[in-house]
Amino acid sequence: MRLLELGADLTALTWPVAARLLPERLEISENRAFWVSGTPDYQPRPPLRGPTHADLAIIGGGFTGVSTAYHVSRRFPERRIVLLEAATLANGASGRNGGMMLNWVNGIDASDPALTQRIYHLTRDGIASIRAVIERHALPVDYRTDGTVTVYTDPGRAEAAHAHVEAENALGIPTRFLTSAELQRRLAIRGGCGAVLDPDTGQLNGAQFVRALRPVLEAQGVQVYEGTSVLRVREGSPHRLTTPQGEVTAQAIVLATNGYTSKLGYFRDALFPLHSHVLATAPLTEAQRAELGWHSLAGFADDLDRISYASLTPAGNLIFGGGSNAAYAYLFNNRTAYPGGSATARKAHAAMEQTLRRYFPAGGALPIAYRWSGVLGITMNRQPLFGVRGDAANIYYALGYCGHGVTLANLAGEFIADLYAGDDSRWRGLPFYQSRYHRIPPEPFRWFGYQGYTRLTGRSPRL
Ligand SMILES: Cc1cc2nc3c(=O)[nH]c(=O)nc-3n(C[C@H](O)[C@H](O)[C@H](O)COP(=O)(O)OP(=O)(O)OC[C@H]3O[C@@H](n4cnc5c(N)ncnc54)[C@H](O)[C@@H]3O)c2cc1C
Image (cartoon, rainbow, N blue to C red):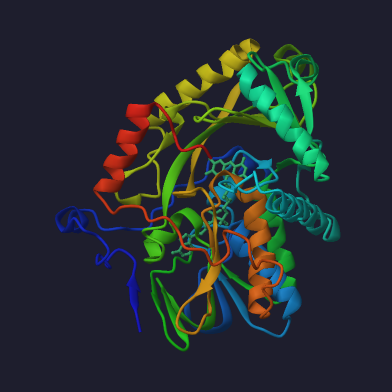
């Protein structure tokens, strides 16, 4: 039996003094993202008090945890499923992101035609599945699927993207190359030499989606506990999860904690929490959107290492993220709460506003109404990790989605439900399923490595 203790298990750290001074503790800051303003009446469920038992205990209440609870409870209505969330549902990245609902998986070899086709179909079905859940339960969720573009800021890269689109079209993938003039008619972005349109992608309000699913989960028999951090996992038969006021004994568990996972003692050498900043405007009038040059499309990302991305809500709020090294941060010892309102946060948001103005000169006058940050789970090769582990192969996980978690973390629920049912045929052979991962060095090398890479190269890990 292994003992994994939050804040006390220091065995994986190689710098004992720093580790003793700065033990790993789960910290989750309050969510001030635009997305939660769409759930004004949301009231969290009470924490777990006392002992309880579950066939399946899910740790984490974002897309991964909620989609797992949804799909497993539909397929196994007789099983007792418990979902434990440290703060409130969607308080993590699922309720703080850039909202872009995209195809593709980062880090995949796009030169392999069969794999490209398989990945495209997988993620396209993932987006369709999110829409199907919204429609099936008539969930009050703002979303759009009128297409997003990748904007190329260099003529050579635009030309290469054009050729790549032709290769994708030959595989039946319906992407479209937009010339600079075609792009400007949809999105008048300065410096855009061309773009690739992915027509069925879009934008999702993740906080509304996750929170609107809670009554559906409860109707399917899932017990949801909020304000309930899992402090310790003692693997065994059954597993024992310690929470501040209770304990869960569970036959199987799910790690649905993405960027926070190292705090549970798992995947410390596989993924690290990267803080990413976002800002959102108040709803823009039609005249403001026209002046900005945003005529159609749900969103865009550029082709740079310090990726900029933006999307527009159905009500007209412009969401903007990235665009400079300051927009991303790694904090020593995997810290998971960013000091919001600090000088560095202000600097990050100021740098982002500058990038926004560079792309859209009229952006200088935009009414910025929200500024926030969130934690992504990043792996070295940018591929996610999907699988099952433990002596009895009953600790399921899906994490490390980098910047594509809106689609992938919702697909994770279907993945875990398949594995729980004993059928992995849909997932076998995918490079991120049950894969070996590239190890990330421990502290302090991790922190120095991140600082060195970003400062010396001027680049951030492309999400
Ligand atoms: C700023 C930002 C912008 C992004 N933009 C995009 C985008 O535009 N498109 C895209 O596809 N992806 C984007 N992403 C990534 C995407 O949002 C995530 O990959 C996805 O939401 C991960 O979902 P999750 O449920 O796995 O993790 P999370 O949503 O982070 O949920 C994990 C949950 O676990 C809880 N938890 C952690 N530890 C414990 C514990 N010990 N006990 C109980 N609960 C615990 C946390 O409170 C949290 O609610 C972005 C992420 C960020 C941060």
